[in-house]
Length: 224
Image (tube, rainbow, N blue to C red; front, side):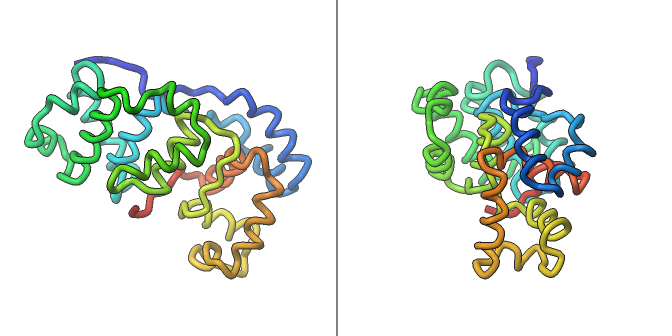
């Protein structure tokens, strides 16, 4: 069993500048920042861990995902990629993973072990390239890619409109005449885009405060 740092609590380098910018542009965001600015941003320790956590969390509650991730972390010996490649499927199933998740995690592990993927490689990619790479794994979609961009790579201008929590916060704060379904539809897309464009180039930070307004864990998952 190994002990390693699972995440870090430190604001990205652009955070202070983003708070000033968002506060100046949007009165609603200004009030959210006043209320929640001391809540720490918890980053994932690596892109690899971020992808694996996204797979673990698919189609289960945030609480269940946290429990399963902790169980895997305690069972792991050595590096994640080695552990996943050498551990039999049957053993991973006893830890709580279904066959689809196991297949996806083993594929991710193989890509890291074979050097097809690397932390340095992801860091050098554009946001669009990161999304393309992650979605090339069967079962991973936009939610997983957004999680990596925000929590591992800490890119400043990510806006995951497909996230249920983001849409709920938009309804609560900006579009009270809508609901979480309609706010994501094309008919309202232009209004949402206009609002999100106000937050650029710090839409990641705006997203964080939208989540905080719900007093909820970020990235409430939907099936991919």
